[in-house]
View 1: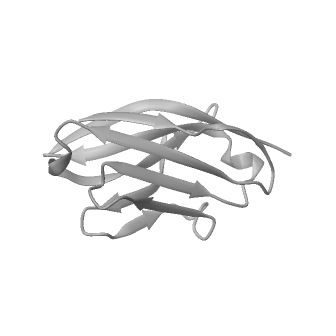
View 2: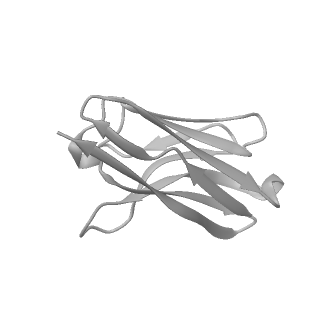
Length: 114
């Protein structure tokens, strides 16, 4: 499975961004897909995950502000980020668990200015 992330950028606090992750290859084997992020000096951590059964998981820090969704095939996954805060600044990476293996896309930088 190949993952292509896009949509990062610079936004002021309180603003919104939408990230897109386009999956290709053996996408029928996707069990879970979503986003992790890594802020400077911190470990990579999960942000939002979507299962092939439609269930979602959000980190406590983004619950109520971020929404993960996908098209019917899970080939394209979106992360709508609202009410952004400076602490949301990080490199956001698309992730998938497919056929028992994990795959990562390249990161996209999100910078939130105060």
